[in-house]
Image 1: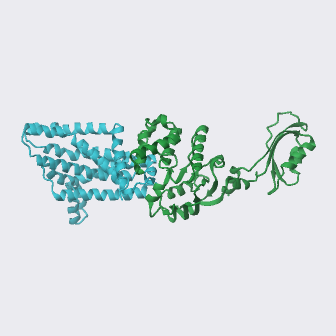
Image 2 (image 1 turned 180 degrees about the vertical axis):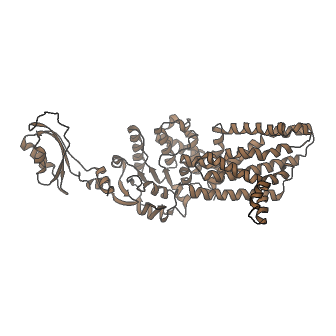
Image 3 (image 1 turned 90 degrees about the horizontal axis):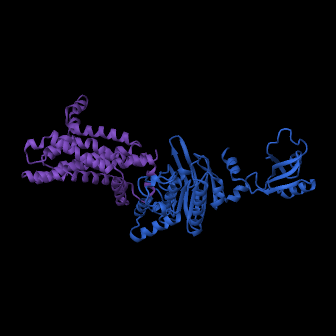
Length: 322
Length: 245
């Protein structure tokens, strides 16, 4: 596994604001890295420095061993980059725009046409090639941006919020595309996102940044394991209202969150009703077996019982809110 | 060094023609050139087989039309965020600056070239000094290049095309009138004589007066050449400094 992207103490200062603070990051071939963090955490700034748009205040960023400050063109020709919001030349047609990108990438003739065709195929742009980009829907615009980024089949793909503002179908398509590119192999893909399910869906590794520093780094499963919901049990049962306290007293249980729907006024107080809750285990404990046994012993009818693997958004808040 | 110049040049130049900009610009340029030459310049009445009145109008035509051409060069990229796209493609900064500039210049030169019927007319009506006319055209193209270089640098400094337009008109107006009393008086009050002389030397009008007569001197070429080079260098620095703002 080669090292594709390496940053060393990468730092960017905007006046009094320290946007990126001595960031060390290594991304290897085959990795799909999800870059997470609240707004203003330094995700975009880091990407802008790796792609050579912004000059680092200090530290270095290199792609395939080429330092972006010293050999910007060597770096830029190896990267495909989708900037935040996917800016495009709005008055060009999609076809004209992709041809321009091919020319800038040093492709010409048959080779250029093949690359454009391949990118168009992957991003399903065929129907809108002759239209001016400004007349396209948001989803198509984003796909033109993606087509532009993957046109030269780059070793390193950097996507700044690739699915932001898209509808669920479009998001699915973009994720599908990222997965396909990753499966093809030989690439390193870095994408930033606010959508945590996206990280679970496409990333092999996730990094959480806050205030310009990396605060968590691991596989999505490892990060989920840091959640207090890791191995938590969410269940829906027909039980008396006292069920919540009973569950909370079980060994190894740290707490119970009540998720029951609001009771009707004058409902079955003290009687049997629908109880929905999440049982949160103490760290390192597994309580699913105990919970289900307890329910059976008490004769509660179990409608639903599910063990959670952890919630990324919970980890995210826990880590970044501090 | 200049990687990406050609694709950027081609994209910019074709960009003028996929929007109405090119057609509006060329039509207005030709109409105004005609008005200045025939109505105000009284070219027929003067009964001279040369294009002096035509060329004399050019500084004033360019004063408003060239900033309209240059204002979008960088301001539009910055407003639309495409500057981030452009500068993360394998294009050298110098290639991008020069490619854009040359495209605008080529377009201005095309508009200028489309005044050729006038040149044919003068040849039909009389026996003009065609060498002088060629010199006039070349000088006019160089002056347009000077205006454009100023405008390109200003455009890189702002996201607003309107601001770029107004500032460029003001700057170009200053350069035009640098040899005339109002500007010189402004400097005479406090600046030493050599500065006043230097300012006077920057006057486009004074310089172009000779060119309109058909005398294109080496020093004029050097003057416009160095002005353009200086403005493009400034353009490069401004793009670098303001790209992220």
